[in-house]
Image 1: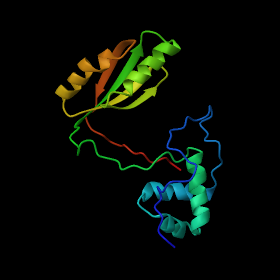
Image 2: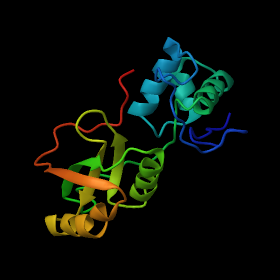
Image 3: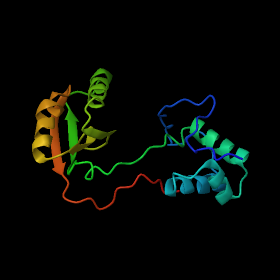
Length: 179
């Protein structure tokens, strides 16, 4: 039996980011074997499908079917290598809380379309409370961040104010989901 890579294409599946339902559910029920499979993939993402199946006590086909089902439902979004921003030269992480000057659908959609085009903005969330959006911004230096503010962030449409917090030290940063 060949060692098929975990990220091999699944017939009929497409590369997409899925929105979650109102309750945060993917539309499928995960059993304990699914959760064990997901924990294993998070801990050791370079395992082949054969190795994953062996660790879980599953043959190739049931293991592949579980993966295919979870990918199709959007439980597994994609497989990537995670790059350490500091090691890549981005020493500054900044969180920007953004207030909008209007909340019409058109204003929000225009802002969101513009913010995704700024490479330094690596995360953007809509939030409740005093602000409308929270951005995580990476910069090589304070001067680079200042340039990003002047040339990109304050140019975003319909922004009333931006409140900035520069991080001093990262304590925890994980992509693992607590399964």
